[in-house]
Length: 109
Image (cartoon, rainbow, N blue to C red; front, side, top):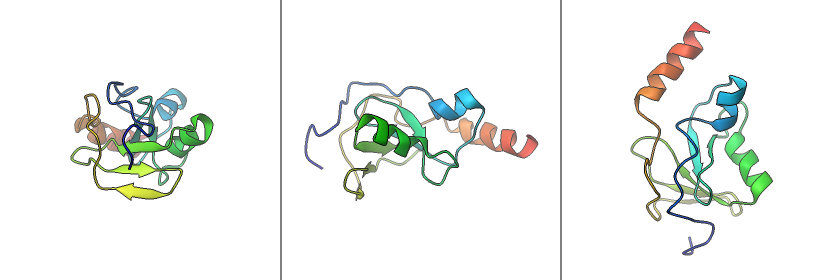
């Protein structure tokens, strides 16, 4: 991953969950954070695949996992995984209790 290529470490994440899923009442498996603008979207295992949609709409190629304990990056333009990269503005993941509340929401409808 080349330095400065689609990364702005000063931009905070757009929220604690997938922006589009939360607006539409949807759900997700895992979250990805755009390294350029901070947009938080759901992964490709999620029904709506908003992180990939954000890349296609914006051209922002790099996303970091927004899961607790994960710091890897994905480059959508090359389909490459990077085990690490620059530290982004906090928070670096969604709150751990968000997973519990999401599972309850899915289980209870």
